[in-house]
Length: 239
Image (tube, rainbow, N blue to C red):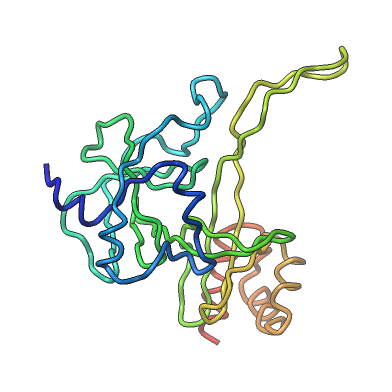
């Protein structure tokens, strides 16, 4: 069904091609011209690098495929598309029905392609974690104003099995571990990691310290919850 539509709009590729092609820091897979993207449509093949059945946990925060809206190079697609986020492989898997259990098809990774799932916008962007080189990946938009943006990045990290060496130690099976990070941007500049604490936020936003203190005084906020941080960026954006 709708084979030609999906053939035009999405590409399927081998696991090896992820590493052979590379992704520039701006999150763009290749030339932005649509004709070039059409030529890069491939079939995703090969075995998974990990046998998920042998690992405790799941690579998904939500296993179900959800009806989604996809913004493709400035155009909102009208066809029904179902997506779920694979937090281990950092991919948006595509299905034609919410009843599907698995899929080998994924959404093209490009900063000009975003999706709306359960009322939340996911974007494929460049970001800079503390003490790490720049990377690209999916981030959930929590706030976007005229000058400030605030994002959440949730991922699954694979941890190998460990065997206890003594009776005082514990053995652990191979498992997926949840990881959550937060990033902010000023005037659409680089996304930088920010920790959710008053001290860290004041340190990252030193030039806005007076405005932050005014926000804290006027709102009796502790900057310990996501709601507080979103409200803060909304306040700073209006100054």
